[in-house]
Length: 169
Image (cartoon, rainbow, N blue to C red; front, side, top):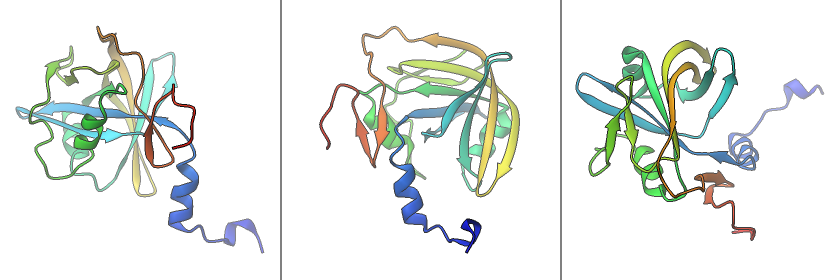
């Protein structure tokens, strides 16, 4: 039997990938007078020259077509104190922005208050792959937020984690 003929069970696949720690971001944009955004842990650097980053989003996302239409997005890198932001922006069909403080980026995207860092991007390329889209953005502006928070929001084995916590939860 070849390895290519072995069926991968979705739950096993998800559990295996859960053993890879990732940072949490919220991808935001602004179009037709409306701020939009979603929680994303599939974010990474692509290139230094030109400065490119990427995120993956489900092809069936309700939010992404609006980002595509806007042609731009902002990556809010969340701090450990922003679990509530991550949870809120992971929900569908709710008023995600109620009570969320934000300001406008140089490209006109929402910067969520308290984020560790942000990257303001124009869409550079989009690649459909499986049930997701890989979106590549060219970074046009970035900034470290003026905050005393130094810990990022991390996700590992189905839970939010802290860099300073060494015990198994």
